[in-house]
Length: 199
Image 1 (spheres, rainbow, N blue to C red):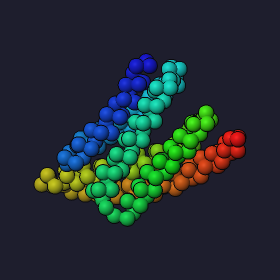
Image 2: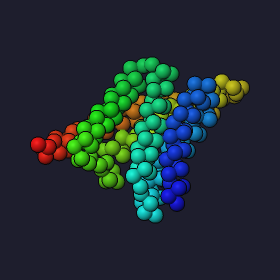
Image 3: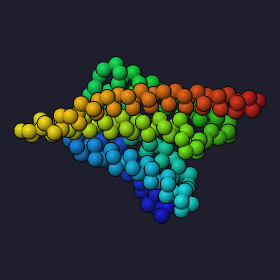
Image 4: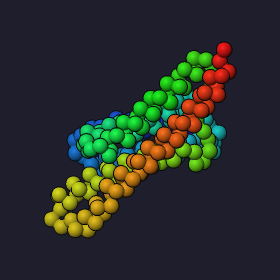
């Protein structure tokens, strides 16, 4: 089971780079399916690791790397494909937030002080990740369905679905931004408390 859990995390890392090729090649449906599978592994690897008590430091690192690469790589591509302020601004801020939190962790690591991820079921970090996944899925589905309509002689049934997807993607993106900022504030407060322990 330990091997399978680590495999899921490794697959997410692979998928985060494979998505670059499929999306830039116009393989939108393939990208959507690959992203959805990778997103599901984000839930199952953690769930299985806890259920079967096979949590390891290596698995934790791979899980963390896979999460960040999957979201950041896809976000960067979406910025290229949709260079409008209401997608680019929140994406840039959220990527900057990830770098900021990583910097805090790295500093505390040099002081041998841990800065663990909150394990609450509905922590702002988890809400942020969920909304990011929903947003990315909506945008990728928009590209996939748009390509389907372009290749179809009668895409009327798909048009109605396409109208809703941009709104879902944008709303989820800004909701993720709000959760991201809230989470960053919580991490900053935790960092400030831990900083007091450093002589």
